[in-house]
Amino acid sequence: MNCFSLIVPYFNEGSNIIQTINEYGDKLKELDNKFEIIVVDDGSKLKANSFIHLANYEISLIIHKKNRGYGSAISTGIYNSKYENIIITDSDNTYPAESLNKMIEKYNQNNPCMVVASREGKGVKIPFQRRPAKYFLRKLASYLCNTDIRDLNSGLRIFKKDFYLENIKLMPKRFSMTSTITILAAMNDYEIFYIKTKYRKRKGNSSISPIKDSIRFFNLILKLVILSDGMRLFFPLSMLLILTSILLLILRLFGMPIGGATSVILFCSGLQTLSFGAICKCINYNNGRS
Image 1 (cartoon, rainbow, N blue to C red):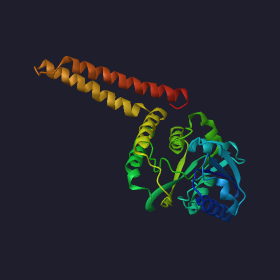
Image 2 (cartoon, helix red, strand yellow):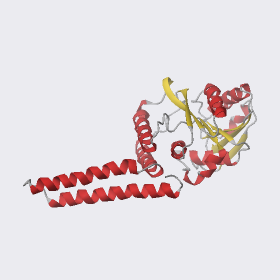
Image 3 (tube, rainbow, N blue to C red):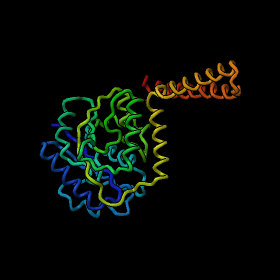
């Protein structure tokens, strides 16, 4: 029998936290697992302690006095957990606990590994406006990590506490913690298994901000490139620029009215781009990922 620490970050989700705790507690109990439940209130105005006393299970509540971000809440929960096996899920009750059956079975069969609830199929209620960015990031991450990533930032997953703590310096305090740990697992040849799950429609208002989310989107792309094999992106781009500069120079020699400065700028840009890839490679090599 494995022992699990269920970490639930909370930020103004209200009574949804009760449904989440009861649903996951019932499932873990049904599967005959020893477990603890840790809720981290990340500086909410709608306090978690106004609701969790109504849940059917004993809960360890940790409170951040101010909002420090999703990643910080997960880290706090993991630091205060008793067990080596970590389960994280969102407090808004969007991830059905029924996925735990197959997830825990797969986790127990493979050690060490990470098991991710992959939001796929007709039962997935991801807002339409979020899907293009999620699809692009997933495909980019799959290309950069040279592996098929079926769900880059799923909020329901199981992994080893030690793996998280070994990479704690690279974990963001706010945005993209789940994306980061997925990339790190892939780059460290850590086995990742994906279990299909439904995804319920989120209750309450969406927190999407076009400007902030656009900035976060490009920030995540940069992080993907740095954490993974940046050469897979920068090398072909640099070759394209250098070859284009050479082609323009040849055309100019044959009498085409093309400024010589254009070729020089493209060639230098190609070398600069190649150097960015080399820097990413050095960062990964320094962190033990060749």
